[in-house]
Image (cartoon, helix red, strand yellow):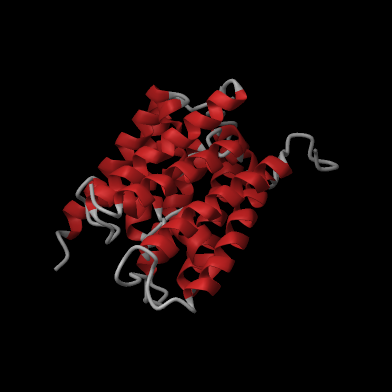
Length: 140
Length: 149
């Protein structure tokens, strides 16, 4: 236990509740959004829109904060380069997302909704992450 | 409330869920100064690199995800969900794991946190994974591949 533990837990609970409330723990709804040329279900766009609006406000607040409320400093991505790795990785992720209608957050949150299926997905996802780590080695 | 022409859509529930997700990411950002990117946090918890968040915080965030979903499930008397078969979930999970590490993030880190910050990398990544997801579903439909019950 340290002072990152409880805020992280609160963030996770809010996140998981939002995913479930927005229908994102149902792969059929996510695939419905991706089925743009079929029976399109726009719900995911409302979920992402709501989240982006709140976060846009948060980023405005960050610009005026010398440090986070509970930590010494902000640790934020600084890269701006568009690399083949970024685009290729996103494309592979999108394929997996489309195949099963699951991305990492809903996959983990769904462990309480359909435990066996979610566990299979999360385990395979971790194997995939480990494979990248194995091939690339531990970065310095 | 339904959207005209889209009887399946749940726009208000979606918006409410999205606001909760935004608040979750705001707690992580304003409180701890970190990006609430689930793939990076999951990699960190598993000891596979990823987020710079403390490992304990990574674990409590991840434990919170199903807890939050459980609260909604209890409040609503269950949540409808249909999942693909195990072999399909394995293929999808491997692609998601590999892709999110190579692509430095997923729907939460790039799609929510990055887009709201107008990050060029996140905008490109999100457009790419959405296009790939749409193309994948379209291709599977064209081939008659039904994966959900």
